[in-house]
Image (tube, rainbow, N blue to C red; front, side, top):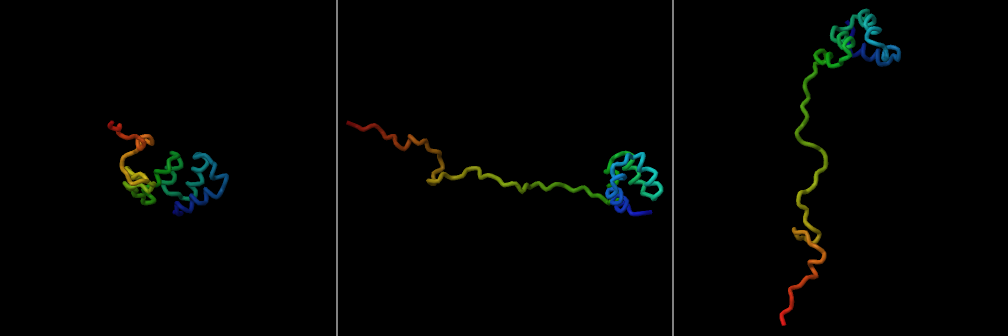
Length: 97
């Protein structure tokens, strides 16, 4: 029995086979003694049927992201934590007479 990877490589390199329908590929795969998984995957149009043959194991996505984040509370340039309104610094308490 030929290696499934080699058969897939051959199909991918040949434009006539790469764009062939499942009905057109079936006799070629039968003649090449392709694995049952490959023949089923081609007939169904579902590559996931090859998972068991290739020993696929579920790959869990990590919980952490590599995307850059933002600081929640960045200090102002003057070091204060509270946002300042530009006019607030000009305000003074009324003068007593």
